[in-house]
Length: 114
Length: 113
Image (cartoon, rainbow over all chains, first blue to last red; front, top):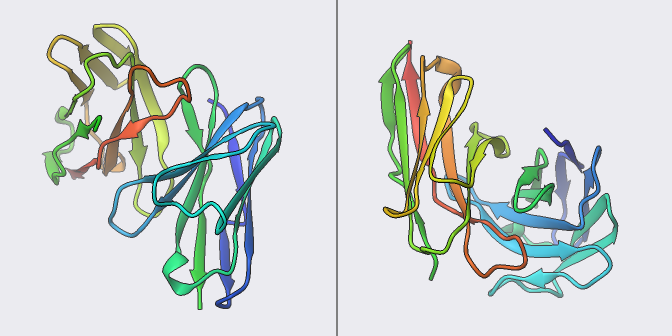
């Protein structure tokens, strides 16, 4: 299967700081990547769809000015959580579209905001 | 609202048995269907996808699709304790040009040694 990486895997930061998470497709080009968030014991929640070379499409209720997404190349999308607060603490997972609608997930990034 | 429904479980089966995981979806025009496995604390990993009615087999896994009944299932033969995880059903709704998947909330499977 296709391989997707995420970096960092863990991040702890102080309230008010910004955190950048990288998502890379390692062995294929991904014109579309997705960003999800998952709270403990809850289901995946799609935050936004990231298309290479264009603006991300955010799901209803997701603040685009708080969660900045950049998909500058066919193998890299970044999610920046700006002015993070404790309620932003979560498991952030990216996925990359491989063929048709098949998505491969990265290993996820755990964010803890103190 | 296009929905994907799964029994949350937990579904408990003994080692060596067949585990049957079920999923229904509301959008009759859906064309592609996926099963992901998610271990506790990890991200989802793709097990199988299926597009056509009928069965698709891959090792110990068989996906079954019945579009008329809007039903997709995953059978796991010879279940192993390592199969214990949450299984997510995902569907690409019709008319979606953005390749988004709608996920069910998942079924927790426990395989007892």
